[in-house]
Image (cartoon, rainbow, N blue to C red; front, top):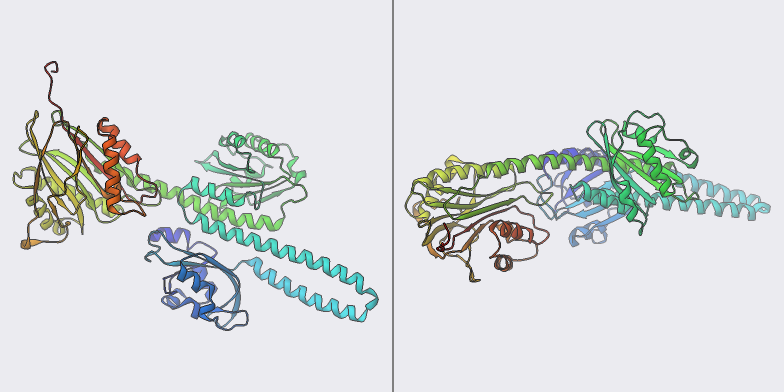
Amino acid sequence: MEPGLWQQVVEQLGTAMAVLDPAGRIVAVNPAAERLLGRPAAAVYGRDLHDLCHRDPGGALVPRERCPLLRALAEGRPARGDDDRCLRGDGRLIPISWSATPLTGDDVSGVSPGMVVLLVETVADRGARREHAERAERAERAERAELAERTERAERAERGEQAERAAHTSALESLAERLTLVAEITDVLGQTLEVDEALARLGRLLVPRLADWAAVDLRVGSRQVHRVAVTGPEGRDAGQEDWRGQLPPAGEAVHSPLVQVLNGGGPVLQDRADLAAPPDSPLATVHDAFLRATGAASVITVPLGSRRQVTGALTLVRTDAARPFDTGDLEVVSDIGRRVGLVIDNALRFGQQRAVAEAMQRNLLPPLPEHGRIQLAARYQPAPAGSQVGGDWYDAFTLRDGTLALVIGDVVGHDLTAAAGMAQLQGVLRSLAWDHIGPTGAVVDRLDDAMHAITTVSMATLVLARVEGPDTGPWTLRWTSAGHPPPLLLTPDGNAQYLEAGQGLILGTQLGGSGRRPSAAHALSPGSTLLLYTDGLIESPGSDLDTGLGRLRRHALTLVHEPLDTLCDQLAARMPLGSTDDIALLALRLPVPLTGTEV
Protein backbone atom coordinates (compact mmCIF):
# COMPACT_ATOMS: atom_id res chain seq x y z
CA MET A 1 0.00 0.00 0.00
CA GLU A 2 1.35 3.42 -0.92
CA PRO A 3 2.16 5.82 1.97
CA GLY A 4 -0.49 8.21 0.68
CA LEU A 5 -3.11 5.50 0.70
CA TRP A 6 -2.07 4.47 4.25
CA GLN A 7 -2.60 8.07 5.38
CA GLN A 8 -5.92 8.41 3.56
CA VAL A 9 -7.43 5.12 4.74
CA VAL A 10 -5.74 3.73 7.85
CA GLU A 11 -4.61 6.88 9.67
CA GLN A 12 -8.09 8.40 9.41
CA LEU A 13 -9.83 5.35 10.85
CA GLY A 14 -11.33 5.80 14.30
CA THR A 15 -10.53 2.16 14.92
CA ALA A 16 -7.10 1.25 16.30
CA MET A 17 -4.98 -0.78 13.88
CA ALA A 18 -1.54 -2.33 14.31
CA VAL A 19 0.53 -4.25 11.74
CA LEU A 20 2.66 -7.16 12.97
CA ASP A 21 5.51 -9.03 11.38
CA PRO A 22 5.48 -12.87 11.40
CA ALA A 23 7.21 -12.86 14.83
CA GLY A 24 4.45 -10.76 16.40
CA ARG A 25 6.46 -7.53 16.53
CA ILE A 26 4.75 -4.23 15.83
CA VAL A 27 5.86 -2.62 12.55
CA ALA A 28 3.12 -0.01 12.10
CA VAL A 29 0.32 1.60 14.07
CA ASN A 30 -2.24 4.26 13.23
CA PRO A 31 -3.01 7.27 15.48
CA ALA A 32 -6.05 5.51 16.97
CA ALA A 33 -3.77 2.65 18.08
CA GLU A 34 -1.35 5.11 19.71
CA ARG A 35 -4.24 6.57 21.70
CA LEU A 36 -5.57 3.15 22.67
CA LEU A 37 -2.18 1.78 23.77
CA GLY A 38 -1.26 5.01 25.54
CA ARG A 39 2.10 4.91 23.82
CA PRO A 40 3.58 6.82 20.86
CA ALA A 41 4.36 4.87 17.71
CA ALA A 42 8.12 5.21 18.24
CA ALA A 43 7.80 3.51 21.62
CA VAL A 44 6.02 0.41 20.26
CA TYR A 45 7.80 -0.26 16.97
CA GLY A 46 9.70 -3.53 17.20
CA ARG A 47 7.97 -4.54 20.46
CA ASP A 48 6.14 -7.84 20.83
CA LEU A 49 2.46 -6.86 20.99
CA HIS A 50 1.51 -9.85 23.13
CA ASP A 51 4.16 -9.22 25.80
CA LEU A 52 3.63 -5.46 25.64
CA CYS A 53 -0.07 -5.25 26.36
CA HIS A 54 -2.03 -8.52 26.02
CA ARG A 55 -3.51 -9.45 29.45
CA ASP A 56 -6.31 -11.69 30.72
CA PRO A 57 -9.39 -10.29 32.53
CA GLY A 58 -7.49 -10.48 35.81
CA GLY A 59 -4.58 -8.41 34.50
CA ALA A 60 -2.11 -11.30 34.24
CA LEU A 61 0.05 -11.89 31.15
CA VAL A 62 -1.65 -14.47 28.93
CA PRO A 63 0.68 -17.50 28.46
CA ARG A 64 1.98 -17.44 24.89
CA GLU A 65 0.88 -21.03 24.27
CA ARG A 66 -2.72 -20.06 25.14
CA CYS A 67 -2.82 -16.83 23.17
CA PRO A 68 -5.28 -17.12 20.24
CA LEU A 69 -3.64 -14.16 18.53
CA LEU A 70 -0.22 -15.83 18.46
CA ARG A 71 -1.79 -19.07 17.25
CA ALA A 72 -3.55 -17.24 14.44
CA LEU A 73 -0.28 -15.49 13.56
CA ALA A 74 1.60 -18.81 13.44
CA GLU A 75 -1.10 -20.56 11.40
CA GLY A 76 -1.72 -17.65 9.01
CA ARG A 77 -5.48 -17.52 9.61
CA PRO A 78 -7.93 -14.88 10.84
CA ALA A 79 -9.07 -14.81 14.46
CA ARG A 80 -10.85 -12.56 16.94
CA GLY A 81 -11.23 -12.12 20.69
CA ASP A 82 -14.00 -10.38 22.62
CA ASP A 83 -13.02 -10.48 26.32
CA ASP A 84 -9.35 -9.52 26.66
CA ARG A 85 -7.55 -6.71 28.41
CA CYS A 86 -4.96 -4.25 27.15
CA LEU A 87 -2.28 -2.84 29.45
CA ARG A 88 -1.84 0.81 28.48
CA GLY A 89 1.35 2.80 28.82
CA ASP A 90 -0.08 4.60 31.87
CA GLY A 91 -0.64 1.29 33.67
CA ARG A 92 -4.40 1.21 33.18
CA LEU A 93 -6.04 -2.08 32.19
CA ILE A 94 -8.81 -1.60 29.63
CA PRO A 95 -11.21 -4.14 28.03
CA ILE A 96 -10.77 -4.71 24.32
CA SER A 97 -12.11 -6.78 21.45
CA TRP A 98 -9.80 -7.62 18.56
CA SER A 99 -9.68 -9.28 15.19
CA ALA A 100 -6.63 -10.39 13.25
CA THR A 101 -6.31 -10.99 9.51
CA PRO A 102 -3.24 -12.34 7.68
CA LEU A 103 -1.81 -10.12 4.94
CA THR A 104 -1.34 -11.75 1.56
CA GLY A 105 -1.15 -8.71 -0.76
CA ASP A 106 1.49 -6.13 -1.65
CA ASP A 107 3.53 -4.22 0.90
CA VAL A 108 1.63 -2.32 3.57
CA SER A 109 3.48 0.85 4.57
CA GLY A 110 6.81 -0.75 3.74
CA VAL A 111 6.08 -4.10 5.41
CA SER A 112 6.83 -7.25 3.51
CA PRO A 113 4.05 -9.76 2.65
CA GLY A 114 3.16 -12.37 5.22
CA MET A 115 2.55 -9.87 8.00
CA VAL A 116 -0.56 -9.97 10.19
CA VAL A 117 -2.84 -6.97 10.77
CA LEU A 118 -4.31 -6.77 14.26
CA LEU A 119 -7.42 -4.60 14.47
CA VAL A 120 -7.76 -3.56 18.09
CA GLU A 121 -11.14 -1.99 18.42
CA THR A 122 -12.73 -0.08 21.26
CA VAL A 123 -16.22 1.14 20.61
CA ALA A 124 -18.02 3.71 22.73
CA ASP A 125 -20.95 1.34 23.09
CA ARG A 126 -18.68 -1.28 24.66
CA GLY A 127 -17.92 0.95 27.62
CA ALA A 128 -21.60 1.72 27.92
CA ARG A 129 -22.39 -1.97 27.77
CA ARG A 130 -19.86 -2.74 30.52
CA GLU A 131 -21.21 0.07 32.64
CA HIS A 132 -24.75 -1.13 32.00
CA ALA A 133 -23.76 -4.69 32.95
CA GLU A 134 -22.19 -3.48 36.18
CA ARG A 135 -25.29 -1.48 37.00
CA ALA A 136 -27.39 -4.56 36.24
CA GLU A 137 -25.25 -6.65 38.57
CA ARG A 138 -25.60 -4.08 41.36
CA ALA A 139 -29.33 -3.95 40.75
CA GLU A 140 -29.48 -7.73 40.85
CA ARG A 141 -27.67 -7.83 44.19
CA ALA A 142 -30.03 -5.18 45.56
CA GLU A 143 -33.04 -7.11 44.33
CA ARG A 144 -31.76 -10.28 45.95
CA ALA A 145 -31.30 -8.45 49.24
CA GLU A 146 -34.80 -7.06 48.94
CA LEU A 147 -36.13 -10.54 48.17
CA ALA A 148 -34.50 -11.82 51.35
CA GLU A 149 -36.24 -9.08 53.35
CA ARG A 150 -39.56 -9.33 51.56
CA THR A 151 -40.16 -13.01 51.00
CA GLU A 152 -43.87 -12.43 50.39
CA ARG A 153 -42.94 -10.76 47.06
CA ALA A 154 -40.26 -13.28 46.03
CA GLU A 155 -42.14 -15.03 43.26
CA ARG A 156 -43.32 -11.83 41.59
CA ALA A 157 -39.88 -10.19 41.85
CA GLU A 158 -38.18 -13.29 40.46
CA ARG A 159 -40.40 -13.29 37.39
CA GLY A 160 -39.62 -9.62 36.81
CA GLU A 161 -35.94 -10.20 37.27
CA GLN A 162 -35.93 -13.08 34.79
CA ALA A 163 -37.72 -10.97 32.23
CA GLU A 164 -35.22 -8.12 32.71
CA ARG A 165 -32.30 -10.52 32.43
CA ALA A 166 -33.66 -11.99 29.22
CA ALA A 167 -34.10 -8.52 27.73
CA HIS A 168 -30.62 -7.51 28.85
CA THR A 169 -29.08 -10.66 27.38
CA SER A 170 -30.92 -10.09 24.13
CA ALA A 171 -29.64 -6.51 24.00
CA LEU A 172 -26.06 -7.66 24.59
CA GLU A 173 -26.33 -10.32 21.91
CA SER A 174 -27.72 -7.75 19.47
CA LEU A 175 -24.89 -5.34 20.25
CA ALA A 176 -22.28 -8.07 19.83
CA GLU A 177 -23.78 -9.03 16.47
CA ARG A 178 -23.68 -5.40 15.32
CA LEU A 179 -20.06 -4.97 16.35
CA THR A 180 -19.13 -8.21 14.59
CA LEU A 181 -20.87 -7.00 11.43
CA VAL A 182 -18.98 -3.70 11.49
CA ALA A 183 -15.68 -5.56 11.96
CA GLU A 184 -16.45 -7.91 9.06
CA ILE A 185 -17.44 -5.04 6.76
CA THR A 186 -14.25 -3.18 7.64
CA ASP A 187 -12.19 -6.28 6.93
CA VAL A 188 -13.94 -7.19 3.67
CA LEU A 189 -14.00 -3.70 2.20
CA GLY A 190 -10.32 -3.26 2.97
CA GLN A 191 -9.52 -6.09 0.56
CA THR A 192 -10.54 -4.29 -2.64
CA LEU A 193 -10.15 -0.98 -4.41
CA GLU A 194 -12.90 -1.71 -6.95
CA VAL A 195 -16.17 0.17 -6.31
CA ASP A 196 -18.47 -2.46 -7.87
CA GLU A 197 -16.83 -5.31 -5.99
CA ALA A 198 -16.87 -3.38 -2.70
CA LEU A 199 -20.59 -2.60 -3.02
CA ALA A 200 -21.42 -6.19 -3.98
CA ARG A 201 -19.62 -7.42 -0.87
CA LEU A 202 -21.36 -4.79 1.25
CA GLY A 203 -24.80 -5.87 0.05
CA ARG A 204 -24.10 -9.52 0.81
CA LEU A 205 -23.05 -8.60 4.37
CA LEU A 206 -26.00 -6.30 5.11
CA VAL A 207 -28.79 -8.43 3.61
CA PRO A 208 -30.34 -10.31 5.36
CA ARG A 209 -28.25 -9.93 8.55
CA LEU A 210 -29.20 -6.32 9.21
CA ALA A 211 -31.82 -5.42 6.61
CA ASP A 212 -34.17 -6.90 4.04
CA TRP A 213 -33.12 -4.47 1.30
CA ALA A 214 -30.10 -2.23 0.73
CA ALA A 215 -29.58 0.48 -1.88
CA VAL A 216 -26.49 2.59 -2.60
CA ASP A 217 -26.70 5.94 -4.39
CA LEU A 218 -23.55 7.79 -5.48
CA ARG A 219 -23.12 11.43 -6.35
CA VAL A 220 -21.72 11.98 -9.85
CA GLY A 221 -20.49 15.51 -10.34
CA SER A 222 -22.26 18.29 -8.51
CA ARG A 223 -25.88 17.29 -9.17
CA GLN A 224 -26.26 13.85 -10.75
CA VAL A 225 -27.16 10.83 -8.65
CA HIS A 226 -26.75 7.18 -9.71
CA ARG A 227 -28.23 4.19 -7.90
CA VAL A 228 -25.34 1.79 -8.36
CA ALA A 229 -26.38 -1.16 -6.20
CA VAL A 230 -29.60 -2.74 -4.94
CA THR A 231 -29.54 -5.91 -2.84
CA GLY A 232 -32.72 -7.70 -1.81
CA PRO A 233 -33.90 -11.03 -0.45
CA GLU A 234 -32.62 -14.12 -2.20
CA GLY A 235 -34.79 -15.03 -5.16
CA ARG A 236 -35.87 -11.44 -5.85
CA ASP A 237 -32.98 -10.38 -8.08
CA ALA A 238 -34.90 -9.86 -11.32
CA GLY A 239 -36.74 -6.71 -10.30
CA GLN A 240 -33.71 -5.11 -8.72
CA GLU A 241 -32.28 -4.07 -12.10
CA ASP A 242 -35.29 -1.75 -12.55
CA TRP A 243 -34.14 0.40 -9.63
CA ARG A 244 -30.53 0.86 -10.75
CA GLY A 245 -29.29 3.66 -12.98
CA GLN A 246 -29.38 7.43 -13.13
CA LEU A 247 -31.80 9.14 -10.75
CA PRO A 248 -33.20 12.69 -10.87
CA PRO A 249 -30.91 15.41 -9.46
CA ALA A 250 -30.84 15.78 -5.68
CA GLY A 251 -32.26 19.31 -5.74
CA GLU A 252 -33.13 21.13 -2.52
CA ALA A 253 -36.05 19.13 -1.13
CA VAL A 254 -37.07 20.01 2.44
CA HIS A 255 -38.43 16.73 3.78
CA SER A 256 -36.90 13.88 1.76
CA PRO A 257 -34.30 12.07 3.95
CA LEU A 258 -32.40 10.84 0.87
CA VAL A 259 -32.06 14.35 -0.54
CA GLN A 260 -31.09 15.75 2.87
CA VAL A 261 -28.36 13.12 3.28
CA LEU A 262 -26.99 13.66 -0.25
CA ASN A 263 -26.84 17.39 0.49
CA GLY A 264 -24.74 16.88 3.63
CA GLY A 265 -27.44 16.12 6.21
CA GLY A 266 -27.08 13.59 9.02
CA PRO A 267 -28.49 10.04 9.28
CA VAL A 268 -32.27 9.62 9.29
CA LEU A 269 -34.47 6.90 10.85
CA GLN A 270 -38.00 6.59 9.43
CA ASP A 271 -40.92 4.58 10.77
CA ARG A 272 -44.11 3.70 8.93
CA ALA A 273 -45.74 7.04 9.78
CA ASP A 274 -42.77 8.98 8.40
CA LEU A 275 -42.90 6.95 5.21
CA ALA A 276 -46.47 8.06 4.59
CA ALA A 277 -45.36 11.67 3.93
CA PRO A 278 -45.75 12.64 0.24
CA PRO A 279 -42.52 13.07 -1.77
CA ASP A 280 -41.42 16.65 -2.40
CA SER A 281 -39.02 16.30 -5.36
CA PRO A 282 -38.47 14.13 -8.45
CA LEU A 283 -35.69 12.20 -6.68
CA ALA A 284 -37.88 11.71 -3.61
CA THR A 285 -40.68 10.43 -5.88
CA VAL A 286 -38.46 7.75 -7.45
CA HIS A 287 -37.08 6.74 -4.05
CA ASP A 288 -40.57 6.63 -2.54
CA ALA A 289 -41.68 4.26 -5.31
CA PHE A 290 -38.71 2.01 -4.51
CA LEU A 291 -39.64 1.92 -0.82
CA ARG A 292 -43.27 1.11 -1.58
CA ALA A 293 -42.23 -1.66 -3.97
CA THR A 294 -40.10 -3.29 -1.27
CA GLY A 295 -42.85 -3.01 1.34
CA ALA A 296 -40.74 -0.86 3.65
CA ALA A 297 -41.90 -0.63 7.26
CA SER A 298 -38.73 0.96 8.68
CA VAL A 299 -35.93 2.75 6.83
CA ILE A 300 -32.46 4.06 7.68
CA THR A 301 -30.69 6.51 5.35
CA VAL A 302 -27.10 7.50 6.13
CA PRO A 303 -24.39 9.41 4.24
CA LEU A 304 -21.44 7.61 2.70
CA GLY A 305 -18.41 9.49 3.97
CA SER A 306 -18.45 12.51 6.24
CA ARG A 307 -20.64 15.60 6.13
CA ARG A 308 -17.71 17.51 4.63
CA GLN A 309 -17.23 14.92 1.88
CA VAL A 310 -20.46 13.08 1.03
CA THR A 311 -19.84 10.43 -1.63
CA GLY A 312 -23.41 9.15 -1.64
CA ALA A 313 -26.09 7.57 0.52
CA LEU A 314 -26.83 4.11 1.92
CA THR A 315 -30.49 3.16 2.41
CA LEU A 316 -31.49 0.09 4.45
CA VAL A 317 -35.04 -1.26 4.53
CA ARG A 318 -36.86 -3.60 6.91
CA THR A 319 -40.24 -4.92 5.84
CA ASP A 320 -41.38 -6.46 9.15
CA ALA A 321 -43.27 -3.90 11.25
CA ALA A 322 -42.62 -6.02 14.33
CA ARG A 323 -38.84 -5.61 13.89
CA PRO A 324 -38.21 -1.92 13.16
CA PHE A 325 -34.80 -0.27 13.21
CA ASP A 326 -33.84 1.45 16.47
CA THR A 327 -31.31 4.12 17.45
CA GLY A 328 -28.66 1.46 18.03
CA ASP A 329 -29.09 0.31 14.45
CA LEU A 330 -28.84 3.92 13.31
CA GLU A 331 -25.48 4.39 15.05
CA VAL A 332 -24.10 1.15 13.60
CA VAL A 333 -25.26 1.94 10.05
CA SER A 334 -23.88 5.48 10.36
CA ASP A 335 -20.48 4.01 11.26
CA ILE A 336 -20.73 1.64 8.30
CA GLY A 337 -21.60 4.56 6.02
CA ARG A 338 -18.49 6.46 7.09
CA ARG A 339 -16.30 3.44 6.41
CA VAL A 340 -17.91 2.62 3.06
CA GLY A 341 -17.67 6.24 1.96
CA LEU A 342 -13.97 6.25 2.67
CA VAL A 343 -13.46 3.03 0.70
CA ILE A 344 -15.46 4.33 -2.27
CA ASP A 345 -13.66 7.67 -2.24
CA ASN A 346 -10.27 5.94 -2.23
CA ALA A 347 -11.40 3.51 -4.92
CA LEU A 348 -12.51 6.37 -7.16
CA ARG A 349 -9.26 8.24 -6.55
CA PHE A 350 -7.29 5.07 -7.27
CA GLY A 351 -9.23 4.55 -10.49
CA GLN A 352 -8.51 8.10 -11.63
CA GLN A 353 -4.82 7.78 -10.82
CA ARG A 354 -4.66 4.40 -12.51
CA ALA A 355 -6.36 5.75 -15.65
CA VAL A 356 -3.83 8.59 -15.82
CA ALA A 357 -0.94 6.16 -15.31
CA GLU A 358 -2.24 3.77 -17.95
CA ALA A 359 -2.74 6.62 -20.43
CA MET A 360 0.80 7.82 -19.75
CA GLN A 361 2.27 4.37 -20.32
CA ARG A 362 0.24 3.74 -23.47
CA ASN A 363 1.45 7.07 -24.86
CA LEU A 364 5.02 6.00 -24.17
CA LEU A 365 4.57 2.90 -26.33
CA PRO A 366 5.36 3.78 -29.97
CA PRO A 367 3.17 3.18 -33.02
CA LEU A 368 4.18 0.19 -35.10
CA PRO A 369 5.91 0.93 -38.42
CA GLU A 370 4.85 -0.28 -41.83
CA HIS A 371 7.50 -2.59 -43.22
CA GLY A 372 6.64 -3.91 -46.66
CA ARG A 373 4.29 -6.92 -46.57
CA ILE A 374 5.34 -7.91 -43.05
CA GLN A 375 2.43 -7.64 -40.62
CA LEU A 376 2.90 -6.29 -37.09
CA ALA A 377 0.50 -6.17 -34.14
CA ALA A 378 1.03 -5.36 -30.48
CA ARG A 379 -0.95 -5.25 -27.26
CA TYR A 380 -0.35 -3.75 -23.84
CA GLN A 381 -2.62 -4.85 -20.99
CA PRO A 382 -2.09 -3.35 -17.53
CA ALA A 383 -2.20 -5.51 -14.44
CA PRO A 384 -5.63 -6.21 -12.92
CA ALA A 385 -7.24 -3.79 -10.46
CA GLY A 386 -5.31 -3.29 -7.25
CA SER A 387 -1.95 -2.92 -9.02
CA GLN A 388 -0.26 -0.05 -10.81
CA VAL A 389 1.19 0.07 -14.28
CA GLY A 390 4.70 -1.21 -14.61
CA GLY A 391 7.72 -1.28 -16.90
CA ASP A 392 6.59 -3.72 -19.64
CA TRP A 393 7.09 -2.41 -23.17
CA TYR A 394 7.41 -3.34 -26.83
CA ASP A 395 9.03 -1.54 -29.76
CA ALA A 396 9.47 -1.99 -33.50
CA PHE A 397 11.39 0.33 -35.81
CA THR A 398 13.32 0.35 -39.06
CA LEU A 399 17.11 0.55 -38.75
CA ARG A 400 19.37 2.67 -40.91
CA ASP A 401 20.12 -0.24 -43.25
CA GLY A 402 16.38 -0.93 -43.76
CA THR A 403 16.28 -3.92 -41.43
CA LEU A 404 13.27 -4.28 -39.09
CA ALA A 405 14.16 -4.28 -35.36
CA LEU A 406 11.90 -5.81 -32.72
CA VAL A 407 12.13 -5.27 -28.95
CA ILE A 408 10.22 -6.64 -25.99
CA GLY A 409 11.29 -5.70 -22.46
CA ASP A 410 10.39 -5.53 -18.79
CA VAL A 411 11.93 -3.07 -16.32
CA VAL A 412 12.12 -4.35 -12.74
CA GLY A 413 9.44 -2.68 -10.61
CA HIS A 414 5.72 -2.11 -10.77
CA ASP A 415 5.00 1.59 -10.51
CA LEU A 416 5.31 4.85 -12.40
CA THR A 417 9.05 4.89 -11.71
CA ALA A 418 9.36 1.62 -13.64
CA ALA A 419 7.27 3.09 -16.48
CA ALA A 420 9.51 6.16 -16.64
CA GLY A 421 12.62 3.97 -16.61
CA MET A 422 11.13 1.93 -19.45
CA ALA A 423 10.84 5.09 -21.56
CA GLN A 424 14.48 5.98 -20.86
CA LEU A 425 15.70 2.50 -21.73
CA GLN A 426 13.64 2.45 -24.91
CA GLY A 427 15.18 5.70 -26.13
CA VAL A 428 18.73 4.64 -25.37
CA LEU A 429 18.26 1.27 -27.10
CA ARG A 430 16.87 2.90 -30.25
CA SER A 431 19.90 5.18 -30.41
CA LEU A 432 22.37 2.34 -29.96
CA ALA A 433 20.67 -0.02 -32.43
CA TRP A 434 19.73 2.38 -35.26
CA ASP A 435 23.01 2.40 -37.14
CA HIS A 436 24.59 -0.76 -35.73
CA ILE A 437 25.07 -3.54 -38.29
CA GLY A 438 26.89 -6.02 -36.06
CA PRO A 439 25.51 -8.76 -33.79
CA THR A 440 22.52 -7.94 -31.62
CA GLY A 441 24.45 -9.12 -28.55
CA ALA A 442 26.92 -6.25 -28.99
CA VAL A 443 24.08 -3.71 -28.91
CA VAL A 444 22.69 -5.21 -25.70
CA ASP A 445 26.17 -5.20 -24.15
CA ARG A 446 26.53 -1.49 -24.94
CA LEU A 447 23.10 -0.86 -23.42
CA ASP A 448 24.11 -2.73 -20.26
CA ASP A 449 27.32 -0.68 -20.01
CA ALA A 450 25.47 2.62 -20.38
CA MET A 451 22.28 1.83 -18.45
CA HIS A 452 23.38 2.85 -14.95
CA ALA A 453 25.03 6.02 -16.19
CA ILE A 454 22.23 7.53 -18.27
CA THR A 455 18.96 5.93 -16.98
CA THR A 456 17.31 5.33 -13.60
CA VAL A 457 16.80 1.63 -14.35
CA SER A 458 18.50 -0.81 -11.98
CA MET A 459 17.63 -4.09 -13.72
CA ALA A 460 15.63 -5.14 -16.77
CA THR A 461 15.08 -8.01 -19.19
CA LEU A 462 14.60 -7.74 -22.95
CA VAL A 463 14.85 -9.40 -26.34
CA LEU A 464 16.39 -7.43 -29.23
CA ALA A 465 15.81 -8.98 -32.66
CA ARG A 466 16.49 -8.13 -36.32
CA VAL A 467 14.41 -9.52 -39.19
CA GLU A 468 16.79 -9.62 -42.15
CA GLY A 469 15.86 -10.27 -45.78
CA PRO A 470 14.13 -8.65 -48.76
CA ASP A 471 10.40 -8.07 -48.86
CA THR A 472 9.87 -11.32 -50.77
CA GLY A 473 12.17 -13.37 -48.52
CA PRO A 474 13.98 -15.42 -47.53
CA TRP A 475 14.23 -14.03 -44.00
CA THR A 476 16.51 -14.65 -41.06
CA LEU A 477 15.82 -13.75 -37.44
CA ARG A 478 18.86 -12.66 -35.42
CA TRP A 479 18.33 -11.97 -31.74
CA THR A 480 19.77 -11.69 -28.24
CA SER A 481 17.88 -12.26 -24.98
CA ALA A 482 18.90 -10.58 -21.73
CA GLY A 483 17.20 -12.90 -19.25
CA HIS A 484 13.82 -12.62 -21.01
CA PRO A 485 11.31 -15.40 -21.85
CA PRO A 486 12.16 -16.95 -25.25
CA PRO A 487 10.40 -15.90 -28.48
CA LEU A 488 7.74 -18.30 -29.78
CA LEU A 489 7.85 -19.15 -33.51
CA LEU A 490 4.70 -20.56 -35.15
CA THR A 491 4.68 -22.02 -38.65
CA PRO A 492 1.62 -22.45 -40.91
CA ASP A 493 2.00 -26.24 -40.84
CA GLY A 494 1.14 -26.33 -37.12
CA ASN A 495 4.56 -26.35 -35.47
CA ALA A 496 5.43 -24.16 -32.47
CA GLN A 497 8.99 -23.72 -31.25
CA TYR A 498 10.48 -21.63 -28.43
CA LEU A 499 13.73 -20.02 -29.62
CA GLU A 500 15.84 -20.63 -26.52
CA ALA A 501 19.24 -19.81 -28.00
CA GLY A 502 20.92 -16.44 -27.58
CA GLN A 503 20.22 -16.28 -23.84
CA GLY A 504 22.34 -14.03 -21.61
CA LEU A 505 22.12 -12.45 -18.16
CA ILE A 506 19.63 -9.72 -17.43
CA LEU A 507 20.54 -6.08 -17.84
CA GLY A 508 22.08 -4.51 -14.76
CA THR A 509 24.61 -7.28 -14.10
CA GLN A 510 27.40 -5.06 -15.52
CA LEU A 511 29.34 -7.86 -17.18
CA GLY A 512 32.05 -5.43 -18.34
CA GLY A 513 34.95 -7.26 -19.91
CA SER A 514 34.20 -10.59 -18.23
CA GLY A 515 31.90 -11.80 -20.99
CA ARG A 516 29.83 -10.91 -24.01
CA ARG A 517 26.20 -11.74 -24.60
CA PRO A 518 25.55 -14.36 -27.29
CA SER A 519 23.61 -13.77 -30.49
CA ALA A 520 21.49 -16.38 -32.25
CA ALA A 521 20.03 -16.82 -35.74
CA HIS A 522 17.11 -18.80 -37.16
CA ALA A 523 15.66 -19.05 -40.67
CA LEU A 524 12.04 -17.91 -40.98
CA SER A 525 9.67 -19.61 -43.41
CA PRO A 526 6.93 -17.72 -45.31
CA GLY A 527 3.72 -17.29 -43.34
CA SER A 528 5.48 -17.80 -40.00
CA THR A 529 4.29 -15.93 -36.90
CA LEU A 530 6.74 -14.70 -34.26
CA LEU A 531 5.56 -13.81 -30.74
CA LEU A 532 7.57 -11.67 -28.34
CA TYR A 533 5.93 -11.25 -24.91
CA THR A 534 6.55 -10.35 -21.27
CA ASP A 535 6.20 -12.76 -18.37
CA GLY A 536 2.69 -11.52 -17.52
CA LEU A 537 1.45 -13.70 -20.41
CA ILE A 538 2.90 -16.93 -18.97
CA GLU A 539 2.93 -16.44 -15.20
CA SER A 540 -0.06 -16.98 -12.93
CA PRO A 541 -0.39 -17.74 -9.20
CA GLY A 542 -0.17 -21.41 -8.36
CA SER A 543 1.57 -22.58 -11.55
CA ASP A 544 5.21 -22.81 -12.59
CA LEU A 545 6.95 -21.33 -15.62
CA ASP A 546 6.87 -24.55 -17.67
CA THR A 547 3.10 -24.75 -17.21
CA GLY A 548 2.72 -21.17 -18.40
CA LEU A 549 4.91 -21.74 -21.45
CA GLY A 550 2.97 -24.86 -22.36
CA ARG A 551 -0.34 -23.02 -21.99
CA LEU A 552 0.83 -20.18 -24.27
CA ARG A 553 2.06 -22.66 -26.88
CA ARG A 554 -1.27 -24.54 -26.94
CA HIS A 555 -3.35 -21.38 -27.25
CA ALA A 556 -1.08 -19.92 -29.92
CA LEU A 557 -1.31 -23.08 -32.06
CA THR A 558 -5.12 -22.95 -32.02
CA LEU A 559 -4.95 -19.33 -33.24
CA VAL A 560 -2.12 -19.63 -35.78
CA HIS A 561 -4.42 -19.20 -38.77
CA GLU A 562 -6.40 -16.32 -37.27
CA PRO A 563 -5.71 -12.71 -38.29
CA LEU A 564 -2.80 -11.28 -36.33
CA ASP A 565 -4.98 -8.82 -34.38
CA THR A 566 -7.39 -11.61 -33.41
CA LEU A 567 -4.49 -13.78 -32.28
CA CYS A 568 -3.18 -11.01 -29.99
CA ASP A 569 -6.62 -10.27 -28.52
CA GLN A 570 -7.37 -13.93 -27.85
CA LEU A 571 -4.00 -14.70 -26.25
CA ALA A 572 -4.47 -11.88 -23.73
CA ALA A 573 -8.11 -12.87 -23.09
CA ARG A 574 -7.20 -16.50 -22.36
CA MET A 575 -4.92 -15.64 -19.44
CA PRO A 576 -6.02 -17.52 -16.28
CA LEU A 577 -7.73 -15.56 -13.51
CA GLY A 578 -5.52 -14.24 -10.74
CA SER A 579 -2.73 -12.81 -12.88
CA THR A 580 -1.11 -9.82 -11.14
CA ASP A 581 1.31 -8.58 -13.80
CA ASP A 582 1.24 -6.37 -16.89
CA ILE A 583 1.26 -7.97 -20.34
CA ALA A 584 3.14 -6.65 -23.37
CA LEU A 585 2.86 -8.62 -26.62
CA LEU A 586 4.49 -7.98 -30.00
CA ALA A 587 3.54 -10.23 -32.93
CA LEU A 588 5.05 -10.44 -36.43
CA ARG A 589 3.73 -12.41 -39.39
CA LEU A 590 5.71 -12.94 -42.57
CA PRO A 591 3.97 -12.84 -45.96
CA VAL A 592 3.39 -15.87 -48.12
CA PRO A 593 4.70 -15.87 -51.72
CA LEU A 594 2.61 -13.90 -54.18
CA THR A 595 0.70 -15.87 -56.78
CA GLY A 596 0.60 -14.89 -60.42
CA THR A 597 -2.81 -13.23 -60.00
CA GLU A 598 -1.70 -10.96 -57.15
CA VAL A 599 -0.29 -7.49 -57.68
